[in-house]
Image (cartoon, rainbow, N blue to C red; front, side, top):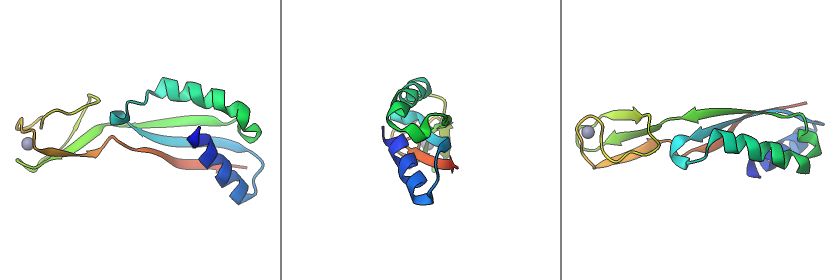
Length: 108
Ligand SMILES: [Zn+2]
């Protein structure tokens, strides 16, 4: 699992002995569910002894876009955007919601 791989690399770089906390940012458009992320994190911890007690914090980011027609920036509650919620145009670009990043790591 790449999140723990990133955390493990950071731990080694810092010369720390354990991973305490990992904060990840997950965009809703990725389709990654927080629950399944937690589940696989817990499962994958077995491969990383330094992460046995690690806590996973998940920050979900909504799907956002910018409309090319009305120039509005918007965010929606849904996982997908099919049209601009303000003017209904289908000419827009997605500006957030596709991220899957490790934001913060706490190692000790
Ligand atoms: Zn629009």
